[in-house]
Amino acid sequence: MTAVNTPAPGRAALDALADRYVDDFAALDPCRAAMMGIAGQESRLTDYSPDGHAARAQLSRRTLAELEALAPAAGPGRVAAAVLRERLLTEIALDEAGVQESFLDTTDGPVQRLRIAVELLDQGAATPWEAVRSRLRALPGVLAGLRTTLAAEAAHGRVAARRQVLNSAADAAAMAPYLADLAARHGEGPLGAALRDAAEDAGAALADFAAYLRGDLAAAAPARDALGPDRYALGVRDHLGTRLDLHDTYAWGWQELARVRARMAEAAAQISPGTPVAEVCARLDADPAHRVRGAQAFRAWIQDLAENAIEALDGTHFDIPAPLRRIDCKIPPTPAGIYYLAPAEDLSRPGTVWWSVPDDQDIVTWTVPGTMFHEGVPGHHLQLGVTTLNTTTLNRFQRTSSELHPGHCEGWGLYAERLMDELGLYATPAHRLGMLAGGQQFRAARVVLDIGLHLGLAIPAGTGFHEGERWTPALAREFLRRHTGPETDEAIAFEIDRYLGRPGQAIAYKLGEKVWLQARRSAREAAARAGEPFDLKDFHRRALDLGPMGLDLLQAELAG
Image (spheres, rainbow, N blue to C red):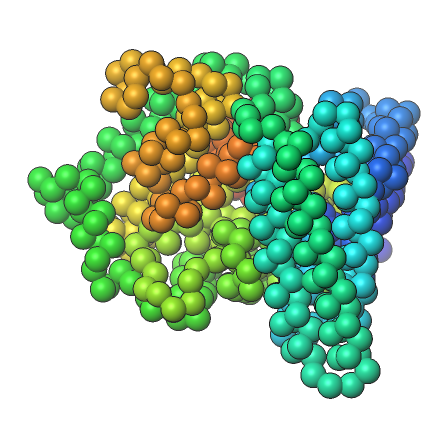
């Protein structure tokens, strides 16, 4: 007789609670659910009215109370309970701090989530047009509810910084032409006409909302961007799942930046001995061998890069499940940076890398492989895909909550860039330098900037950069121009706006990588003490099987 693997009664009750929470969460926040790959809410949008915010806060408190009544302190459900508890407590802390209702952001605020919820339905011939129509029809009402919330918060003096308000206005205005184009693709017939009508109404609502943001709300918004240590610490808790000594971490960021720049000098010397790093980078930028013309040619180039990485790693350094051997690389219809979205939990949508590039220009490629390994395999596509497929040891909340744990996810992505170097899988010395210049240096600079900007810290002596002055957005732009992957002033400005809108998120990459590296070092040392060989492939399997979690929990579990 074949044994049936059923969870213990305590774990079964915990998993049932987690499943209910995912269903209730998705119903109350369909936009975020779409980004997390949770199926079942494709026709709906998030309610950003005061009632919608209150319902989500109530769900967190109710679920926490149920969890505390049954969560095991030990045994197979211990980790699952700790992960859910950590997230619920963070959501409640954000609600109690009053930051959710007034939140607007350059990259991940309500406007951007509404856009992404529609973009995720845009699947060419496979587009679910009825769901698109439903979301378009819901958009005017959702924007009205969001405006009510923002106005109520403004009446109490709680308004996002003017920079974030105006960036959200620009994104709202830019969304309307895309919706019109999307609707026009369906063609003739009753549904096509309904789609065009819905897109027209949605476009008018977006224009009105953008005007409100630029006018009334911007007039009430503070010019000051820095959010201060208390709000920053809450951001660290939200994005990293840890608590930090921010001044020590700021100092570490400077040290890490110096270390990476020393490695860049070594890598540049391999390409052109005796040539300054900046000149080597400029030569690579100008080299036709490291350029691709146009968005579609670039999309095909990164698609090949992603597929070749899967072929090189599968069966050797990782065992990649069959559904994850497919990855889609796409150019978003409206500029939105570079990001990855995991497969839908029902695998109706594959894991997708979205990469914004201009349509009619040369695109420099020598810095791209490191980023693709971060977003694809062995980075997010492997990490989040394995999580999505792991129905054996992870409950539904654990499988779908990667989006809620940037420290874990982005830390792994940056670790993946470095791992590919350790495995010797950068095809050329230029690609290795690109990883250091565009990935490692950039993320170390983010630690310095993010903490320095929000806390208004002084620039230390010995750095060679405006020593003794305190950080401002203007200084940040100059600093990032020296230590960055973005090539244009517009891209650099976008990065600074991003940091100022999401305190703590930008440091998730380097601080998360630090925890992954420490955990691997500890596992290697433990194997040596036991007189056993260290199995890197097994370490990665065990680490990814834990699922996403905050960094404090991750470090504790990998040390156990």
